[in-house]
Image 1: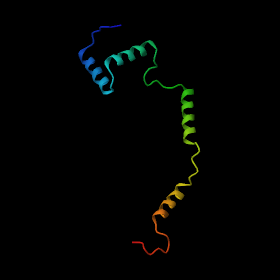
Image 2 (image 1 turned 135 degrees about the vertical axis):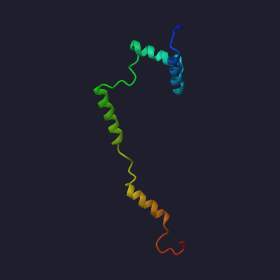
Image 3 (image 1 turned 90 degrees about the horizontal axis):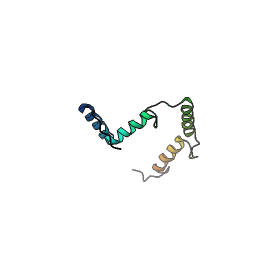
Image 4 (image 1 turned 90 degrees about the vertical axis):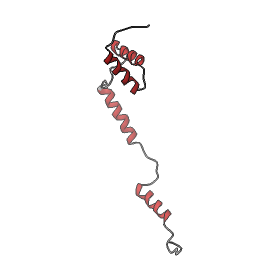
Length: 95
């Protein structure tokens, strides 16, 4: 449905500029705001419920504490890389 409304010029230009910065059209922004107004979409930046917040943190914790591949410690990897670049002991052809 087409709708015609009078919007103050300065407000319209600010909305148009903000929409352009976010690569959106004024039409898309207007539809989103209408949907939020009637409750089809949650308010922007709405806080998660306590249960959702805890679930998000538990999921993040599971990702962080997931087992790593058995590749040795960082120190072991560093020593292996250093020895790869050093000439073998007793090699007199070094620079």
